[in-house]
Length: 369
Length: 164
Figure 1 (cartoon, helix red, strand yellow):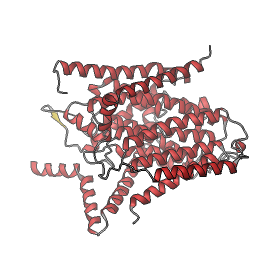
Figure 2 (cartoon, chains in turn purple, green):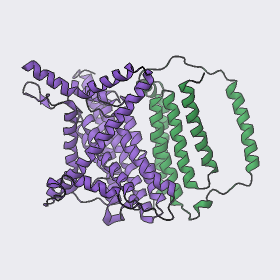
Figure 3 (cartoon, chains in turn blue, brown):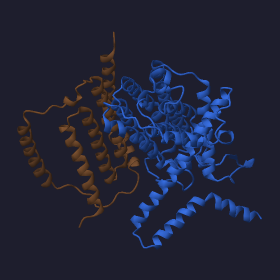
């Protein structure tokens, strides 16, 4: 009986890896070149990943409206489908069938390409996020650097959207968004440097393996976790840092002139970025796909690793809902002051403290190097 | 024999050259800035083909993420409604083309006659792990001097932009 349970648990844990091996074996059996098989497997992986992300997005949008509604002592959507479950589907259909309004004197190519660049960049980050022990699209040696550098491409997209719309509010909103983004990119990177110092590698799989061998990194680097999360919230324009797209402040910032499916792309990219914040936070600080458990006391490892990843990322995302329903919005000067005069010195202090504790610990032979 | 590597190199080189050409001959200055972004991306693609992954992503981070932002801010803050005319044609186009051709021939001759030290073995391993000791041990002094230079630039910018 125990053997059967072990087999079932093994099967569920490795279901994606086994399916991948089966498909790879089938393709090789067809007599294709190995390089072509690699490309086809990559394309299949990308399709599955994007499918998961977009469906997850529908869940997240529904959850956001419900959770923020409950925090604000109201019910949230409850008309479309049982308990409003089909609300996201209705929203998607609405955005699909809206009229595509193109501003008259906008720079058409620049204006049209901006949401494409932003959405592409939002999706590209997921190439190095591990969903399980062998469930990663591409285990780059420079995984964290890839994430930070690809995230920084969004500035170009935002500037294109702001300038191409031929609208003063869009331009101002775009420049503010880029200023906010590059200001908070620095503490984000500095906080991750503390983690990289401990792990000794930029690869996300190495980071999770380090957490499997030692303890979860949010215990070893609590300040870095907090700085990462706050800076990440500011990077994805999440309340309380959503000045650049708040309706009462600047119409809708750099995506004022977009309607219908183009706005849907911006919306998509925003939620994808927030899910990236949660996913990267779980991978780097909360142990990725490792199960929660105290050896000897309780062991929850029968839950498959990809489900653990999802639970933890969703828990971090819930903190985002929580903060949204609770905190008021920052002003632009408060925002910038907080980044440059608050978070950056803290992040630098974190790096020095990590290095100092490590060196002193090595000198006292307190822990292995 | 056209290998896949040659093909990829050719495609990226075409994109790079085309984008660079559009930067200098484009009529609209914001479009020129965006073509520059494309050329930066093509250079990053070259780095990836050469297996310098760290350098490729640092190229994207610094050039596309920071230098481009600087350029586009400079352009849109001095925004003139006549952006169609922001890159007017040059009266000295023929002379410029001639001098560019001479330069191309000179550099081409030098490049083709140099014996480049080639590494025949494909590189596997972590470039970051190799770069760390180089930066912090072998070349620590130039690294520190470069950081001081950046600090001076930062302080200079803050002083220049102060209101009092």
